Picture (cartoon, rainbow, N blue to C red):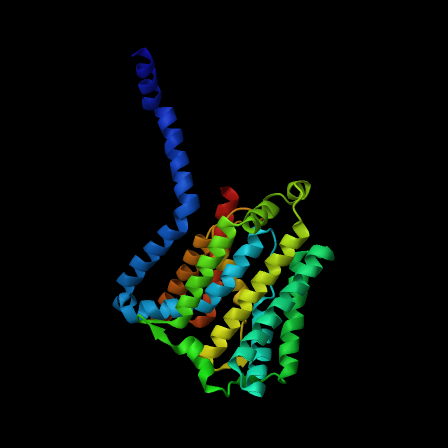
Length: 329
C-alpha cells in the first residue's frame, strides 16, 4: 500500500508531469509537425478560397505533385544516407530526352522506357562511383553532374524539345482509374516500395546506419561504398521514372526547361517531412506529407493570384525554417 502511495505521489509531482508533458510535445512536434502544418494549411486555404476543397482541385494537386513526389522518394534515401543529390533535375532532362529519341526512332514504347531508366541508372552509378570510390563530396559530385547532364541534354537536341510520335506512349500518364490519373498511382506505388525498402530490409537499415555514423557502420563490417552506390543508382532511377511520367503527360520533353529546380522542390519536401540534412533520421511518410504540403502551398498561391516569381522565395523560407527547427530539436 505504501509503495502504491509513493508511486501516486511521484506521478502527481508537478515537476515529473511537466517533464513528461514536454517530452510528449517534443515527440508530437518531431514526428507529426508536418501533418499538423498540412491540416492547418488546408483549413486556411478552404477559408480563403471555397474552390480549394472541390474534388477536382484536390485531385489536380495530387496529379501535379506526382513527378516531384517520385523524385523526392529517391532524394529521401540519399539524404538519409548522409548525402545529397543536386543533379536530379538535369538527370530527369537527359534521361527523358534520350528516352524520347529512342522512342521516336524505334516506335517501341518498351525500348523508350528502358532507355530512359537505363540512362538514369547509369548517371546514378557515375554519381555513386565519384562519391563512394573517388571520395568526392556529394555536393561537388552531383553539382558537376547537374552541369554535365544538362549540357548533354541541350547538345543532343540543340536546346529544343523532343515531341513524341508514338501515340500510345501518352497512355502511361493520361489514363484514369477511380477518378485519379495514373501518375498518382505511380507516386503511391513508389512511396510504398521505398517505405518497405527502408523499413523492412537490410539495405534500409544500412542506409540509416551510414547516415547516422558512417565510421561506426564501417567498423560493423558494412560495405558503405556499396550502400552509397545503391543509394545514388536508386535515386537516379526514380528520377528517370519521373521523366517517363512527365514526358508521357506532355508527350514531349524539354532539354532546357524539364526538371528545372526539381532539386529545390525535392530537398524542400524531404526536409519539411522531418528528414535531417545530416542523415540518419527521417521517414518516407514524412516526405510524402511534405510533397503534398508543397503542392497545397503552390495551389493556394495560384488560387490567390500570387506572382509565380515569389513561389521560390516562399519555398526557400520554408526550407530555412525547417532546418532551423531541426537544429533546435
